[in-house]
Structure formats: structure tokens, C-alpha cells
Length: 117
Image (cartoon, rainbow, N blue to C red):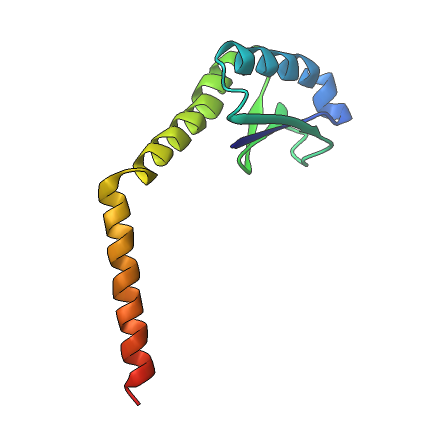
């Protein structure tokens, strides 16, 4: 799940954090990704000199009410797509076979290490 945290501290509030939260809520709902994005608020992130601070999976970014739509497409939806691709790849039979083989090799190496004395 993608974690999006908007600063709602006094400086960011003055810069439009409420409008940003409302627009993000709308966009997340409109694009039907509410099950993939967790939107929350926090107090000061510590970069008050920039626009409204927003954390997207721990990356500190800056946005203002005029750029929130583009920000959401570029930063939030990009992360959702990335996670979806990773999820699809994780279910791949090729990847599953590679992981199984890596486990077998690891077990064999551990056996050799344990019995080489």
C-alpha cells in the first residue's frame, strides 16, 4: 500500500494543505485506488520553506494547490502502478522458479558449510 502523508502544520495549512488533502481524496476516489493508497495527515515535517510537504512512501516532496493534480499523477499513481507491476511479477511462474532454485542453492551451501569440518 502506498502511504501518502500530508503536513497539516500551521505553515503548510496557510499554504493550502486542506485543499491538497481534499483534492487528493477526490483523485484517489475518482481513480478507484483507495484500496492501494492510504492518505493521512501529520504535523510539521520540517521543510516549511517549501510548499506543502507531502511524504510519498517516505520521500519528502512539495506541492501546492495548483499542482496537486499533476503531483498525484506523477508521484502517487506512479507508485501505485509500480506496486501493481511488482505484484504481477511476484506471481510469475518464472520468478517463483528462480526463488525456489535460490532457496535450494542456499540450503545446499548451508549443508556444505555445516558438514565441511
